[in-house]
Length: 114
Length: 114
Image 1 (cartoon, one colour):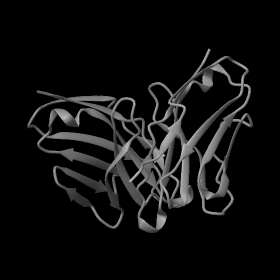
Image 2 (image 1 turned 180 degrees about the vertical axis):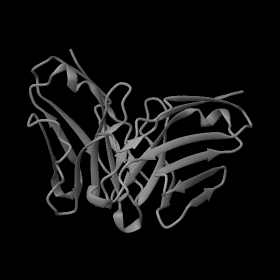
Image 3 (image 1 turned 180 degrees about the horizontal axis):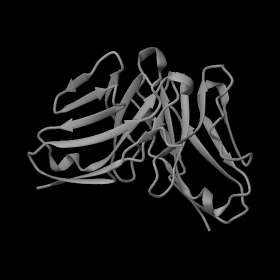
Image 4 (image 1 turned 120 degrees about the vertical axis):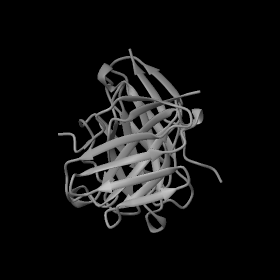
């Protein structure tokens, strides 16, 4: 079946502009995660959605970052007034907690802020 | 405060030999551990997991060992193949981080030499 998809695959933006990154999880997966991987670093947890529960936003680095998940499916991560330190690969993952702990990752969006 | 550490950023192994990737954690409340493999320009893919009630889990060429007293886990790949060349991440969940929130290590780049 279809895996997790993310768009765009690459995004170059100027410092100060807003960007939106999209994630389409695997159909039926109730949990959705956003991570960030900066150059030479591990995966940094950003936010977690599970069903209709309030999201766990504890990993969002600043109030410039926000995310929403509409209809329990597609999710959008928005970064306002981008800074050069926001440059990273943004990864989305989904899982079905009733079937196990494994997360299924999308290919990521490489964001470059110039 | 890095709760999950992979202290070896890279490892080179001859084809056919054993690869051993190590991971240390600090939070004794972690109760589930996963290994992911990541190829360039792709999202991580799940490899193998282990619950804290076990000390070993095997899947084909991959075996994960957990030493709870040392807060250490390792991934053994035997025999290693050139296609195993990738970045390997360990991840942990449980305790105050919550069941479904994963803390990732910084990854180890494995190179299997033909």
